[in-house]
Length: 192
Image (cartoon, rainbow, N blue to C red; front, side, top):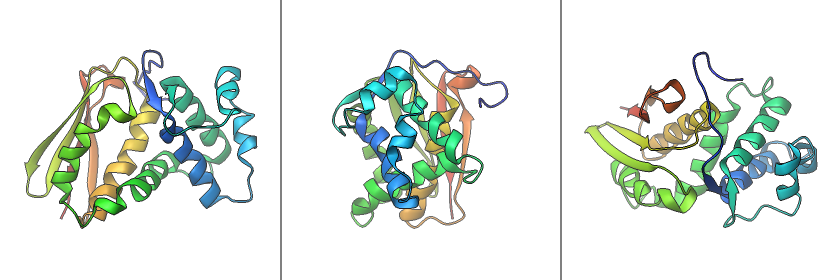
């Protein structure tokens, strides 16, 4: 499951339930015929116990719970949805960013999103660096927990955000990654 040369560390941080809930919102929209219980029942016991009580958007969950959920979705849908993790990121952007599109530019959005980082996860630091009129970098540092699964969903989120703000021919690459031993996960974005 891990990319070649990648590692992950799942302990040491928490994320908001809205991140987990968005995966099940994707399921409801893309596969309404599939009961969410089939995914929940396939989770490790500790995560399953938390999610059977319901998923509260404002509650804190372990980072490991999110990765367990993503793995369960990959097991169920990975072969039919090869870009599943990116799709989760795209879905999240459509659900959460649409209302901001007419109020600011892509650069303003990314600068402002840095200020909201700690509302969705209780670990690490985020920064945005504009690299040109049609380019920028999102930089995430000091993450005690990380996984290439988490990084893969970020690709889709950033691609979709830039597209929603009018960017075309969007390219997103991960120039640096803590999963490869770098000191940050740095996503370089460019567009026309």
